[in-house]
Image (tube, rainbow, N blue to C red):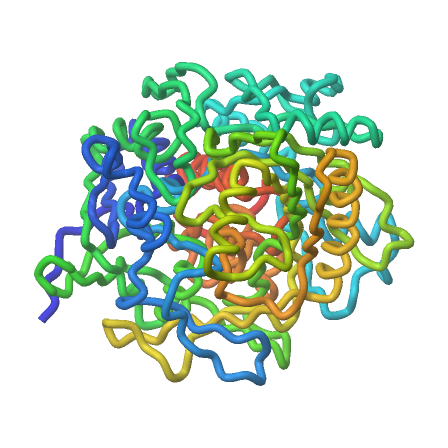
Length: 590
């Protein structure tokens, strides 16, 4: 029999960046909050310290910071007419687990989205006409604008201590930054990273072709920094262990290094770990949440946590899954286009170029950091004319130096045997003499790309798994080929005798890693028929449920999503604090 706990004002499902932001914004209120985290507590000390945290086998190969697929996974298929099968091994994306979630093992690449990203359909129809958008694409506007989020972007970047050089401050375009970025109110709080050697080669070649390179905005600290919450971060040691790892040096911005130290000290906040939420509890009419039910993983006890407000702040696709399991909203049906939960699942469309240098060019990529990169945005979003190209959207092109760890990094040119002495000799020959360009592309929503509940497979608790149906639309494949070809032109000028151009091809596979930028499923918008949440992340169907994170994205942009996730969290926190708590009701645009 389930036990029922005393009621609280706010319950968070998942304790990463977004939950920590909202909890901190409510610190001075009388609101009583509980954060439920299904994993265990992890902290920089002792959990992320070396030499244990530099165990590539444990964390990069065996995914020690990631979701346990033996307890809960997803099923996958490319098209609705296929049978979905469970992911038995992590591959294409890496959902985090434990306190801090994916914010622990991210790289720290911290880009803002562009104004047209928030008006995706309107912008393209206004500039090019309706015919430029393929019929199968279900892209739509977000229901808010860049201008709505600018001050919240600023707050998040100062919380993280982002290092960069702004290209547009107050409308002034500044050489050395991104000339395509939207106007920002002030510069980054810290200076940019110093470019790696691969970045220097890339910048020189890009400028010779008329492009405008700049350093990637980095949440790996470029100097010691104390954020507005009084939490101190230390300079990055360029150790090459960012992605898939926690940072031992307090040098990568994460929930543990920016907010959790102060949130956990708040008198009105309590953290509860090993709490696996199974549903949001609703009133009989299904229009109001009364709290959540979770399993205490330490004891197996089913527990009811009553609450006045429920915030779904878990990883991307966990939020729409919990909505579907709880009966919040209507499940999307691609055959009719009806339903507001599960629609517009999107990802990231990745391409690459490999550069194989002679032995006199030593790139030393083992000295890396998650956001150490030199980038051009000339082909991101709508920064170039699409009128005669047959697609919309774009990608940034970047020379990253994130670390060349010995188990997973062994680049060899095409034609190399896949095993044996010749393979070993090639690995030794090319290990320190190979670089790569990343083509980081937009992902347009498509009518047949969505998530729903699997009718066959269940998790360890007897609940239906989330089913992902996804493949790259033709639009995105054309975009990837076009921009990856431009990356190949830059690579040809970088002096490598051999280059290999790798645009994205179909079908999408969940086996090789690509990115952990899963988006959509509980998207925000202005119409409850085509979105699960309003512009504040508030459920249209159950107004005392709010959603955070990339599940809100109607489609994905060229840039990495974390900066926008943080800005949206501050935006939602402001709406809850200044409007919802004093008058609990559906929020409307002033």
